[in-house]
Image 1: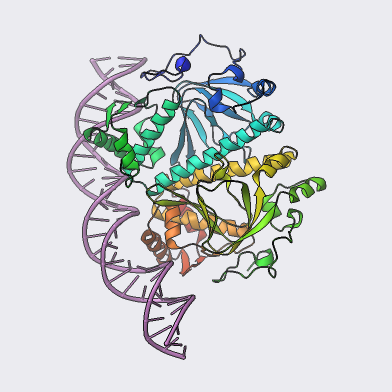
Image 2: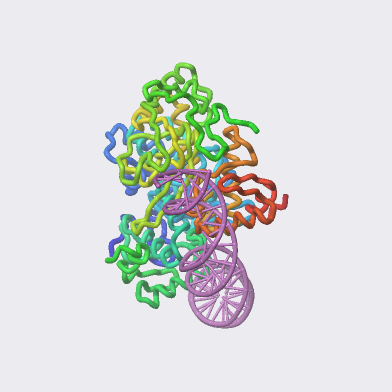
Length: 260
Length: 260
DNA sequence: CGCCGCATTGACGTTCGTCAAGTCTAGTGG
DNA sequence: CCACTAGACTTGACGAACGTCAATGCGGCG
């Protein structure tokens, strides 16, 4: 099985041990030689530009499982690039109902919601021990005035998020439970694959309830639908470990009319 | 009843006649004295900056009812500021199902979805005859490198869209039909009010089916739920004309536990 | 060992979708 | 001016999908 460089995201049940022996926050790993660079930074920079990009990361921050990177209402100051671990973001209605708006993994950027009003409007919760690069937003703005590749990159990241959310709206607004779950699993495994993991196996870092919240379903429906997938031979499920046996069939589920 | 400056958005059933006698596209109305400036441009600019902003709008474009401003797959080149009229944006799944992702009105910016891949990923359809300002995106990027207020503004617009979509996800993922429709009506009337229209009356520029698509409901459910609101004395409905009689009750519907 | 959180499964109820009939309005053309 | 039509809307009857409630299982951890 293809493993990610540095084993960023273990497929075993327990969270992966830190890559290196506890790196104190002050000893920075520069963006310029970060193995996630292609994921979170623009490509094709001049060496001098690359050097300046290194300064974007003011510091690193470790977040333990179940702790929050930021919360609704907190002052916004920085964007965060995820180095290790998986997060969920969630919004909460005034009456307490909440909705998971996304699951984010290594190389993805979170915190964009805070830009409008200088305050975050959602919570970011670590689903496993995690580490992020803290990139003060005023520094990002300053630098992206000078490095046009960075400017373009920031715009693309935000646009990508908007497009992703369009997809979620389509899912929530017009798909049935099986289609939602199939789309979810395929999306997860595809993103993991892009990070060097298996194209057919994954470990869910979230509970059935969190999946349900994201997909607009109750946890029982998620569980039942998963069981149905197992019955039909589409996947193997062992706790949070999922092996996809028939990706083609899952794809057909998501997209009823497109046969094969 | 408070009318908008220039009667941009009539409350009568028929589309409002053009504000001025047909203005040829070449005769530009500069941003600097556009009555929508506070809605779509940054505030507190220096006069010299304001002047440069005027150059952002390359041209104007009129779109007739039911025609598209851009379509899924088309090359992305510009953002559009809506001057008059209402649009819907929609995404389409490969099997043809589509989902309305938003309704946009005067002063709002559309086209952000195209930035990531240089191609649009949704359609923007005019729900009534409309006019937009065409702002070539490379010009926006260029100018926002020099005018920091513009840079900040662009970031805020994109972030605002992300936050709005979070709200829609919450709605689609965890609200029931009555709550969705109540939230929809309150949101619409609030946005119209911000544009100088009545705080309690509105004319729907979209069909029941389009509302349903946006809210993840079938048109029959939208119709039934509206009828129920009428029975309960929350609103008056006459075709597409809606008068809100008990906004407080609608708000309570959206937010069950918060009692008045 | 026993507790706790997470997951599964079944029985039942509610909400919303589906299908179908019928109304209303605006637009068209005689 | 009025019949005719098409599209949007309403309403009812019924059914399917999913939520609710409850019992139970299972694995991990103190």
